[in-house]
Length: 553
Image 1 (cartoon, helix red, strand yellow):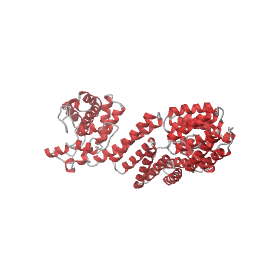
Image 2 (cartoon, rainbow, N blue to C red; image 1 turned 45 degrees about the horizontal axis):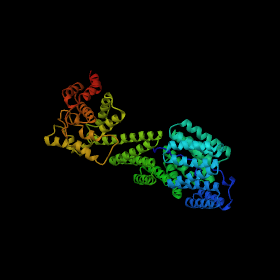
Image 3 (cartoon, rainbow, N blue to C red; image 1 turned 60 degrees about the horizontal axis):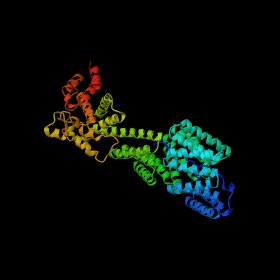
Image 4 (spheres, rainbow, N blue to C red; image 1 turned 30 degrees about the vertical axis):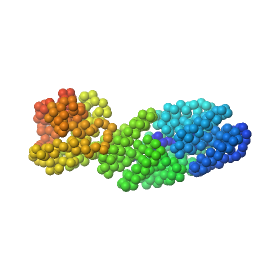
């Protein structure tokens, strides 16, 4: 199931979320009906989805207001123009316009207009990941706006979004419901639509699908009535993910494709990226892999073009899952590694609880793909099926006994799943030979650690797995292969996998011999204790060895 859009709530920066005070109520220095008329016309164009025309209209209103000295009209036109430019991914121009709007409004003592400009700037900060700046600026706007109920309703909405993405569900619900109550008091339909939309997202995050469905329908109905095209598109897209979670794939595709048409009309490239992602997941889940790959690639391209790290990471993860389904494991792992790095950038830039959850989910996907790949390797040898899973279990016991942390334990588990990857190049007649190997055959077998590393030459991992793959047959006394490493030249991780590997080989049936009794296996390991570091051997005997001895008794 695709991850829900918990971070893509509707922010409320004035133009694209909520209603602002009408400039007709504001005093003007020298009234010029052209400036006000131009502003009103630009707002109508924006509401109808005519983005380039709306931007041109706001620019004309700005010019007229500058000429006539109508500072309040100028401040409003600048702010609305800034929000439009932000939608078009022109962040610097958007900020400049809204900062100027704030300065103009503050200069004429219009507190509400100045607060509106701060609200817009806070929305920009939020969308670009500056969460603390966004929160501080929203609170500044709330304080400056005083008793302005309209503005208070929208800021409560935005603070709800901040609470939601940081895992404060109760706080988010409180902000959203206060916003909804204020909008109902005002008769603000658009404000109500936004509150319903974000309550839908909160419900979806909590997997309350019926509530999410109801809220999205309410929001969509209002958006259609008032002609808010962009909000209608967001409702369709987020509703598509509810359908997807419920495995209603036809409904999910229809909603996502309808939203894509809207975003294409508006030129909203970031939203197009998310729409392509959902459509790609639908095609993947319904077995149309070529279409899925095409749509997910489009999602990544649009995310890259807009600089959206989160959308790029999520789309890369979904494409990796597609490649896993198709058995294209190397490509899947390459994409997962790229997504892991992207989530790391988000974690460094933004204090988002949601990112931690997404990275945890991503690591689960890593584990699933690596496990599947390891099992597919073992399927060529009926005698060793389940070997990697057992080695992983033994290695984790040893790692915990040695006090290794969670990241190191993850390294052990993933390394165990892939340690025999190179055996796919070993001829079947050698791999499954019933008797002892000849010197030449053993020389071929000894190449599998090298071949495993070659197969992963283009794959990078967030964990240090490659030493395990190459050196899991090295021995502390220098008698191992392929590089005849000795002593502490051998990484600890490879030593742990080695001792787990040897124990499983001794205690399971192989093509060349039967499984040894546990007591005999442990005796042979005591006789060979020079193969491993003393602390590795001791930790093994305290955990796996002790358990085996108890079973034998």
